[in-house]
Structure formats: structure tokens, C-alpha cells
Image (cartoon, rainbow, N blue to C red):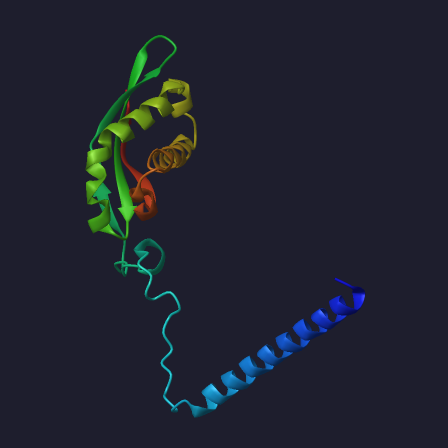
Length: 166
């Protein structure tokens, strides 16, 4: 192909592209003007998608609900003897219907707390502010234990309702 033929071919492509673009714009304008005027209803963009965990939220209850967990007894090391800790926990939620199956996960809860208390010493549990620290550690431990489940999104807080050390 010679230089002159290449220029003519390129020019023809540019002219054809311009004509197609102009035709598309003109056709779009004609179509928009000839459409019947209807009132538009604003609908959410993603309303037709079925991803309930992203778009559909159950209305939470007005106040929190508390779900009591089974009593847990653990051992902790002491200076001369082994001591026992008895915990009763409550899970705070605004979706009690979705948290009802948490009782099926009690082995997970027990295992997580057993691991937490394995490194505790009796003296650690007797210090000032130990309950606040312990409550935060228990909450973090349980949220981590439930991280791979759907329950984690419904747990608002974890409360110590009973705490006895012997």
C-alpha cells in the first residue's frame, strides 16, 4: 500500500466514524424528543439485586435484648493452688431472633474462654479494675471466636452477669 492510498484510506475511516457518531447523536436526540412524557419514579439503583445482607436491613427493636449463655467454670493458676472462676455471660443484641442459635455454639464459647484463661493467674483477677479489663477481653475473645459466623454482626456487647473466683 502506498503512502497516498494509506492517507485516502485513513481519511475515509475518519469521515465514516464522524458520520456514524453524528447519526448516533441525532438519533438519540430524536428518540428523546419523541418519547411520551411520563412521570419518573425514583427507585433505588440496586433494588432488584438480591443481596439481603447489604441492602435489606431488619428494623431493630427499640431497645436492646439480652441472651443469657450457659454458666462456664474455668480454672486459673494460683501461687499455691488452682483456683476456679465461674462466669455467666449475656449477649446484648437488637436482633434476638437472629441470635437464638448462639446456644449451638457453646463449645466454641467455652473453648475460646478456656484459651483466654489458660494464661491468667489468680493475682491478675484480684487487681483493681480487673473486671473491666476482663469484660473487654471476654468480649474481644468471643467476637473473634464468632468472626467466621453470621452471629458476629448481631452481637452488640458481651456482659459479665456473674463473676465468682474461688
